[in-house]
Image: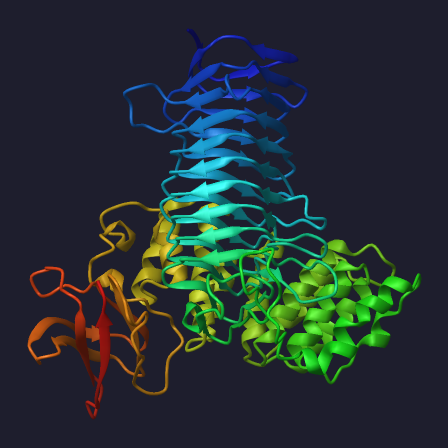
Length: 620
């Protein structure tokens, strides 16, 4: 085995033909192509990188893959393959790196038929419209399978397709400010199958492509915050759909903070779907009707969408007319009296069909006329997408979009969409600190959804743009203190795997059984447990309008004490308690009827007390 020491730049066309120990960074220059033969193993020392400014070609085979790894017997990580130019990687094994394969601004390429495993991040994509990752096994990475940041495409050439993504410690696909096309993947055994935050309108299928993703056996199938993922739409042509979400423990879809998730014509594991598996808060909404009544290949639910009767002639049937016309004025089919969500679905459809001007007109009208609506965030997102597609005369391109967002950001009215525009605008301007804008929004919009969003924007800025890990950790800690166990706090703290992170604690601890979102209820409440009957565990959600002391006591059908949990102080919000059907000694209990008695006492003036009980049926 040869050795490659110190920092070296490969020149011209370079061919690696033998196994090699790499003890320094290897940089492939802008005018250089590095070719690696099948069966080669490259072993990188701690913190070393393969940096591609030119081109990398890996043509392994199924029986002789190219392997990138660390020395045997060590636990240190190398840095991974950093692509700034172009990479074609086929039949490779990429393991034990900080970031297995990385694509940065201006890069392009494909990764196929490869195993990407046992890294911190499997695939890391930042500030680019590429690559295509297909037919790969992405698994056992300690934080994320895919981590995609500020990467948007106008033509869906940023694509995650036909991969098996499983057993990554936290999340299968994490998206921030990114809109990839995600099709034909199987995603399972994660806390979150897919996370979409900060205008990440992932497409699980698109205008002429089924989604065909199978997302199962995660805690949450898909979670969205200030994002608008598309999973399918009922039309007379193919518009996504055919995704399968099943056996995701807590939620199939979790929509937060003014997200709009359109998810029609998918299979949700049962017919009808379990409504408790769809969670919304903070002005978010999920449209999962109509659904498939069996796994893809079955027929659509007979009742159709609840709005079908209203829009059948004016909306869905319009596409049949479009197909017959050579020159189409789409706006002749538009009705401004439609509900805002349907107007925006229409705007997105005609954006796909190429009428950027009309799409932008609809979106701007909604933002300007209804800035207080949660759907103004969806309108702003479609406007952003359309600006990247703008080639037609009269359409607003990306520079015009940035000016429009800046105009929103300086409005004096205190509306959430204007605060969010301030965060976006700071990210577009090189001379304006995202951290400064985040601090301003955090202070100005106390009591809304925006402080949490602002802190997470600030965290991502420090982590991904400035690589300031100290400031990123400081902001992650603040998120965890102020918004414990929220999606944003957990997604930040997973980057810092130390003993102080709640994500490093056992999922059976009482702290992990509390799931808190920042939208506050206006009264106390306790839901029925779900599932019921159950085996081996069940959950109840409770609402606290004020900071409160909470006691949860379980009795059997004879009134005998079984278990008790006390929370001395919980913040106002929505919480979830999960009972594992065990007694105080952690012994599993037999089948039978059990009663959960809930008491909440406010810790503010007046000390209001709330009591309620639910029946729970355990069937072993």
